[in-house]
Each structure stands twice: as C-alpha cells, then as structure tokens.
Image (cartoon, rainbow, N blue to C red; front, side, top):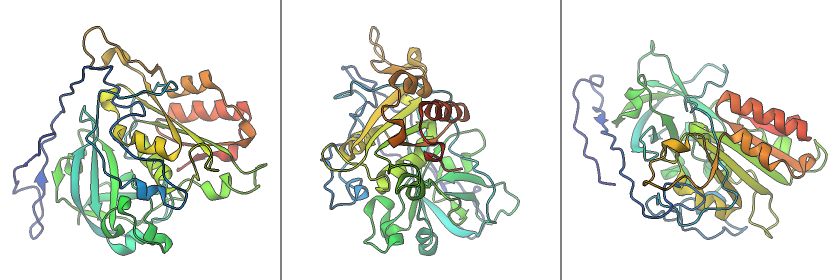
Length: 363
C-alpha cells in the first residue's frame, strides 16, 4: 500500500492547536490469483509461532507482521462465515459515570480493511488514563478537544490492556509506553472529524464500563466447573473489544496440548473486503483461537470471474446453529456486534445448555 502524504488543512482546528492532517483514504486494489479474497481465512499475513506459556499472548501480537495477504495461503476447513449488516464501532454501551476528560491526539490513521469502510486509529493518551484500562471490553467517550457542546462518541478499546496497568513490563502491542489506545471505527457521514485526519486533538474520557467479566464468570466454580471452551462472536467493528480479549491473555486460551482453553471465533462481515484484522488471524490461531469467518453477501465479493467465496456464508448465528455447542456446561461465550446477532446467539447458547451468566457482553 503506497504511503499517503495528506495535505494540511488550516481551518479544521482550533487556534493554538496543531492542525490535523487530512488522511486521504485509498481503497486498496486487491490482486490475487489464488482462491483469494479470503482476506481472511485464518491465514492472512501473520507468520507467528504458537506462543509459549511463559510469554504474554499480547507480546506475540507485537511480532513482525507481513502486509495483509488477500489471497489466502490456507483456509481452515471450519472457516464458517455469515454475518449481518455492520454495527458501528461507536458502541453505545449504556450510561456510566460522568466522563473525566483528558487530552488525546490521533497519532495513526490507516484503513482497516481493503474496502476502506473501517479505519484503525491510534490515540495517544495520558499515562494515568492508560493505567485505568484494566479489562478487555472497556470503552471511552471521545469528542473534539474543548468542544463541550459536541455529542461524544463511544469507542471500545481494541488494543489489550497494558501490562503496565498490572504492574508488569509494558507491552509493545498496547502501544509505546503503554500510553496508546487503538480503536476500530466504521466510517460514517458524521464521524469524519476523527476518521479522516491525523494529529487531531481530542478529549478522551477515562476507561468506562465493566468490560467482559471473564474472571468472575469463566474462572472458578461459580457455574459448575471452570470454563474449558470459549466461543467468541463478533460482527463488523464489534471485533474491536473481542481482539482485546484475545490478545490480553485473559481468556487463558492455548494451543492443543498446552493446557489452556479451546476457543473458536465466529466473525461476520458483508464481504471479505469489509473484514478488519484479517492480518491478525494467523496470530490468533497461533494463540489457540480457531477463526471462522462468515460472509453474508458472497455475491458481492471482489473475486475474479468464475471464482466464488470458498468459506461459510450467511450469518454468524446460522454458523453456530450448524456447528452446535459440543459441551455446553463447560462452555462460555464472548459477544460484541449487531444486536440481532447477539440476541440470536445468546438464545441458541442458553437453549443448548450454556449458563446464561457465562454469555459475556461488554454492555
């Protein structure tokens, strides 16, 4: 992907602040001669060896990443697929404490998928604010700096909680000095002020919400025996907090034979070109998470003539129904995304025998 040198705009910032630089998002042109567009399929662009039990999974997330390979090198037989319309990553998770605003600045802004429908941004925050982020699934409120009349947006934090918050060595995957939050944002007509610019000055609240109550509900004997199997479900930009849960290590997932939990991620989008984090799928599988992409509009895939999407089609809940839940009483789930999906998946899981308290949502 060619580097972007955005022009400087002079009227898009407040006096005395550094002018934000507009990012001209380029829609990547995808070439692949193979059964490509599986921009996903647990293959992708990560070349990461399975982590050892002595190293933090998030540490492995900092491993070298090859550019996304949109022609799949391999595709798991389980690569299911369906999904419903995208849910915005501006996740409205209910009202909590009043926000305490601190300064933040957009330091990175790149397309998160080939279609350019989502962007991945990094925001530099204060050390105190970063230290308050301790649970995967937490979110922040964000608004233009100093604009008290602006309606803030709610963004789930995509990067894992920093190791510094736990008194450990700072984790490179969480950002320099553990003072960077990463977000995945679906572009809309009204959020260009944050999705289209670099160096944008922001007001960022303290991390809010209880996140995914993993320790309380998946560990211990609160519900029968401790959870041995974890099912993860996400649609669209709802993958952001699920990424945090995976890369934080809080799920205690491990590759077969390592003693950790088994895990499977059902991730739904409209087309493979609309799928963020495809380049991380190999990393997640190396951690022990089976990735099952689900495409709801296979007929809209940008595939060469005569080729079709080789994976699962339909919706995430359909894929779950087809596969079933092997051991419901020993299983838990983590969900984030479009409301219809989370409701349907919750119903399927609980009817199968999964304890309702082990179906975790971050709102």
